[in-house]
Image 1: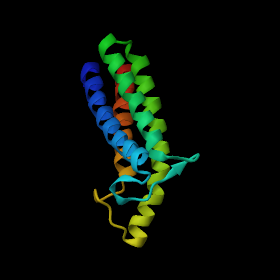
Image 2: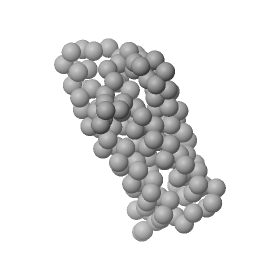
Image 3: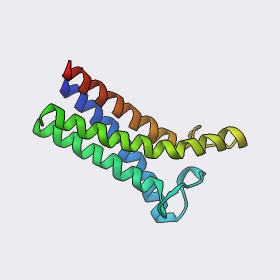
Length: 139
């Protein structure tokens, strides 16, 4: 995959994550409850989706800046890898609890799986693409 295709793919994935986490965040801010009739995980007193939104927005802005400016390869890919790795760890910690509830209690979710799982998958995809791009460039 070319660097341009990598950045475009990352840009699309991060935009999708930003829109989804943004929807969850705005819904929480306006209604005081979590969207999709799910339990709302908190981190340091704030809904986890707010942090997810900030991380996805950071990914989107870095990918957009790298795509527009044609940044040096390693810098853009390294930032994207670092942010997506952080997002994977963050969302993964909530996914573990959500999946236990899903399996143990048979909890039903509006989107089949807990919403944190989708954020986790997007972070992992961006990280995997970034890691592969960095490794390819080093070879």
